[in-house]
Structure formats: structure tokens, C-alpha cells
Image 1: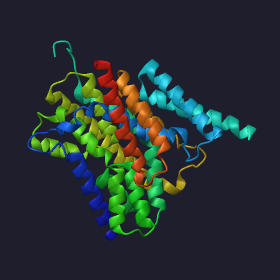
Image 2: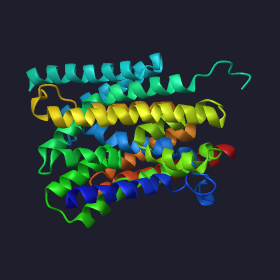
Image 3: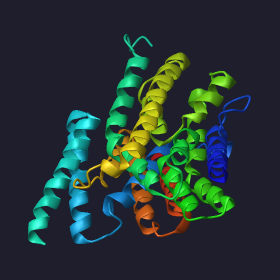
Image 4: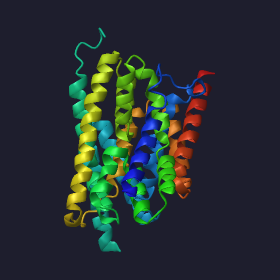
Length: 107
Length: 232
């Protein structure tokens, strides 16, 4: 029960942060933030993606980082050419598997 | 909207959401399986999906609970991890301005990473009225939400039988890369993303996921500075 209630509180707190600037009488971001808001999406999404792209399994090393970066580049390329998110993901993930498979013979 | 003769916000919302849900299959299943493997009742662990709707903090919360951490530690840690949602809230406020207060309050519940990423890409890319924006958001966020509930639930149920032969660790970061790409319009966005990415890698060892929020703030400042230099 304590565990469930803890999760409820985490959920309420998370909701409060999501709702913070949206549930007032008027939905208004704070004035001081205005200049920075256009950059929220690229900054936050890059901050989420980048560490896991250079160390997908928690380790930065040539055989871990390079294959992941090659797969990321392939994903980027396929998305630029096709605008198809699912296709780009499959291409990147598939290439990553191929490289890991190849490396398993070298190592 | 004379230059946009045919707009299908609901259809587009469902389509974009399904793409994200497909991309989330490995991550959702793996997260569910991990939740079920911890020392917390699997159903209680799964309720973090409808309660929190944010994968990383769900994992952190349940992991800490399973290690016997004090509830207050769990709450503080998870909320620091989730602090980026404050930025999402401020960022979408101008686009939700014309919605009713109750609608905004309801919409905020669904405002997780992929919902924010898809919504802001849509709003910045298409000049739609507030009704079309609402339709897109509702269709997109509900389908993504339902997908998350089902995938994490399936992961909890199938945890033990999922094959371990295929490594899937890269699926989640590639998905976020794909959510990032449509937001890269113009030099300030590239500078913002590159700066945030580099800082996030350097600051990754910081506790409580503080590296993420620190990197996001530095990236936003770099983007704003670039914009000002361009304007000068």
C-alpha cells in the first residue's frame, strides 16, 4: 500500500509540473522564459537522446560508442530522405544489430 | 487557413501516435519486464504507467521502492527526474491559450515526452486554429497513452518469456533522436540541440538525472544567444 501511495504522489507531482503553466485562468508562460521557450524542444530532446546514443549500454568505448553513432547517423539519413519515423528506426536498429553481429566475430 | 485546403488533425494525430507506439515497442516491453522483475508487486509497479506516464521516472521510482528506499526519497528523486515537464508546460502554453481551462487541465495529464515532441512539431509546422490543435492533441496523446499502457502491461505479463537474444538498448535513444529531428529548424535549434547533447553526455554521471535538466537549460540559453546574434 505504501508503495502504491508513493507512486500516486509521484504521479500527482508530475501532473502538477505538466499543468503548471497550462491550468491558470489564462495559459501563459512566465515572461522571463519567453526568449528560451522556442528552444525547449531541441534542447530537452537532445539532452535525453545524446547520453544513451554514445553509451547505449552504459559504457563509452570504441566498440560500444562507434556502432551506436553509425546507427544514429543511418537513422538520421533515412529520416531525412523518407520522413518515415518507423522506417528510420528499423534501419538504424537493424544496422546496429549487423555491426554488433560482425563485431562478435572479431572480439 | 486558405493555404491549407485539407487538414486532418485527428487522422494525422492517430498516424503520428501509432508511429511512436511502434517505435516504443522494445522500450515499453523492456520497461514492463524490468518493473515486473523488481521486488514490488507487478500490478502495483504497472500502475506507475497510468499514474506517472513517464518511463524513466517510473523505472527510478519502482527501482527505489524495491530497494526499500523511504517514500520521500522516491518522490524527490522521481520529481527531479521529471522536472523537464515544467518546460513542456511553459512551451505549449501559447498554443493552448484558446482552449477552455478544463480542457487544458485534462490535456496536461497526457503531456509526456513523445506527446510534447509531436505536439510542438505539429504546432510549429502547421498554422492551425485552436480546434484543430485540440483535435490533433487529443487523438495523438490518447493513442500514445493507450499504447504505453498496453506495452508496459504486456512487458509485465511477458517479462520472463521475452527473448534476450536481440539487444534493444538503442531503440529508445533512436526514438528520441527521431522526435528531435523535426524540431531542428534553423541554426538556433541546431546550436541548442548540439550544446544540450554535449553537456548531457558530460553531465551524465550527476545524480538524480540532474545532468538532463542542466543540459536542457544550457542548451536553451545557447539557442537564445544564437538567435540574438543572428538578429544583431
